[in-house]
Image (cartoon, rainbow, N blue to C red):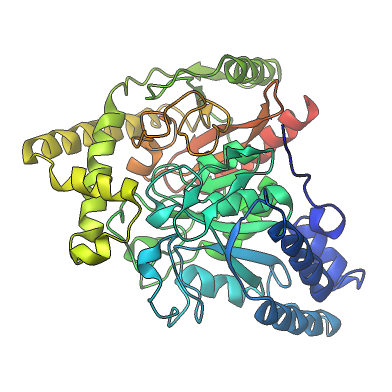
Length: 465
């Protein structure tokens, strides 16, 4: 198995450690940024490099790092992420940079005229935004390649997928090329690659991180951070979870505290997936449940009959892909990857009655999932049913031609339907040394509760490994 070792030294430091080193003069943001850029440059010369980035701007990043260095010298850091290297997924606008969305169809598009709301929040907190990470084309699937920048590889095994659509973000964090990456998740696109790459990925409550402009996947789409630990995720959310008038769904009051009472914890090993849960993942998940019970937690198995809903989700997904490109000329659509063109055509050919039944089925599932949380505070599930598949495949022993990725990953998308917070954090490794994750879903708007419990479980899991 060909692996890539994560960067050590200063690049192994988390957000709190970097800030402390900056404040006390042991490190400078310039030193950290230059070290990071050097590591990425070495990877670019490797024929089997990770290929996590589609755009880098070393000159601008070092200029921002120098400004941060001066603020620390004066004892005036401007925010909790001052001097921290951060990347942005290439579906999100950064002023002056291209937004290619993993596609050849956007090659002639001008650079973004202004920052997205999330990019602006990161800048205001002092983050050193140094590059854009790879995404599957327009975020349509969970394989880790696209026509614009090629294959993104999994650091744990370069013959394996990094997952998607936040492919580069997960691979970057796993390699240690900065403690924070901003991804997006409309059906699992933060949590699935986090599980495959052995990092933390958080899909917050819908609208928690303002998102504009919105796409055809608007009510499913969430922005979310990928980090190496939950503490860094909490630090990122303290910056990113802010209201912005450009995204009306973000205009709600943020919870200031967590209710002080024992958590009601549910668990399930099946939501909706045609892919059976891998036996090694099931065994580690069961051991975690046993440890929780022996530590005094009260657990309840939750039976959610979601079987077959993934096919309805795929129908809706195809319709949204069709909506995304319906106004394009045939010539421009021809520039899309043939796989994506096939999904577009499937959406165009949909029967109205079938689409209506699919929407009704998903509403019913969303209601049932959300109602479950009147009896529990958090729900534990595996983050993915398998470890990362070989490059180009949706499942370890599947066909490269498969498109319906919901059928292979039924744990993630239900919480896009319900718009609830869901956290993926590393749970263990299989016998081949490949990582897999645990998912913690919580009640809508209770992001702080999910993250706090995530820290508890991160510590518990860490002591067992």
